[in-house]
Length: 76
Image (cartoon, rainbow, N blue to C red):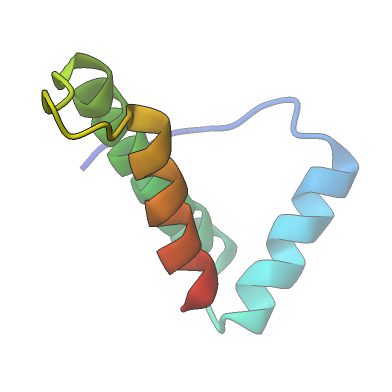
């Protein structure tokens, strides 16, 4: 594991993170690491989607697929 120091975090961002960590019963560090994991996974997925060839003959676009995933996420 690596250590990471954050600098120049705006006060309002810091306060929101502290509150969210408390609400999730986590330390600030654990909460931020969890959020960074989510971001890192999303970045990799975005890279994959950007290089994935669209299926031919289906009429389904990448935008259609993204919208479908968002609908499922919002419904859960």
